[in-house]
Amino acid sequence: MRATNAASRLGAYAGVALLLSATVVACGSDKKSTSTSGATTTVAAAPSSTTGAAGALTMRAGLNDPKDPNIAVLQFLPQSVTVTAGSTVEWRIAGPEPHTITFLPPGQTPPTPDKADPFFTPTPAANGVYDGKSLVNSGLAPQGPTPAAPFRLTFPTAGKYSYQCLIHPQMTGTVNVVAAGTKADTQADIDSRSGSELNQWLAEGEAAKQKLTSTPPVSTKNSDGSTTWKIEMGASTAHTDVLAFSPASPDVKVGDTVTFVNNSGAPHTASFAGKGTLPQSPIDPATATPTPGPSPQTLNPTAVFNSGVLPPNAPPGNGPPEAARSYSYVVKTAGTYNYICIYHVPSGMAGAIKVA
Image (cartoon, rainbow, N blue to C red; front, side, top):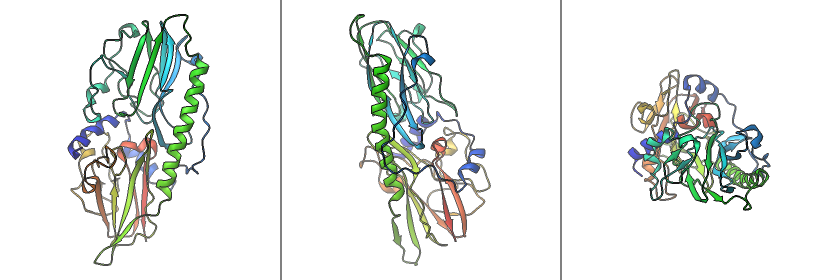
């Protein structure tokens, strides 16, 4: 994927409307997101359908770890459900990582994530009833700090219907509609499978975060005696994204270089507000534009610095060359430099470089 295409893909993460001028202050503190031990997390079952539409069967569309928002599960929960004809299915999109619930017309190929922008606006079904032939789409949600409204569809006709999240290609689901009187899933069945799958994917994400945050920083000695330190931007598994930076080394000295490298499956930025203001929206062109210019840049404590979009290493191991996924900052002055990923601030993706 070319960097320019990755910039378009960042629109796919624009469901999070950020008030960055306020958020940067919070992310700039020394408080870190909850660390995990890699132990399996037990999560409560999906919300009861009694709190949703009357008679609707309730499912989840992705979920950030309730204990650690850095970990985003990129799966429908459960992945497959069987309902009787005439049933209504309700999806909850809690966020903060946004998703789409998209039923494409038969034979239509899904767009790649960088081409998904036209689907960020909802395409509702007529009267909320799915005919099995038309495009039906939740749009990108949530688009703010609060959970999205539930997305509901009624399925009147028996058949097997596939759907997906257009910004997370691995995130697919199936609704199997069977004739009335045929055995189908109850809400208890759905809750049980959802909880089992969720616990499995959370454990997967927690282990990935543990590895990301506990691996010693990679460093390279330079010919002038300085050191270049590497910071990893997130991590990805088959079912999750870890939306966190690896810790900056406590041994960074004046004159050293810090290089941010994106080896994950999601796009990220490494952005310093200083005493200024970063772009206010993920879809602002300034968000994807390196500021004040291309890498490397020399940090100072007052100016705004933004790597722009650093594309993912996707497909895994076959993404753009590392140089296209990296951005470097030279630290010439002692101090604390707080940074964020603009696209994943709501998931707590932030860090600090402390230079004595």
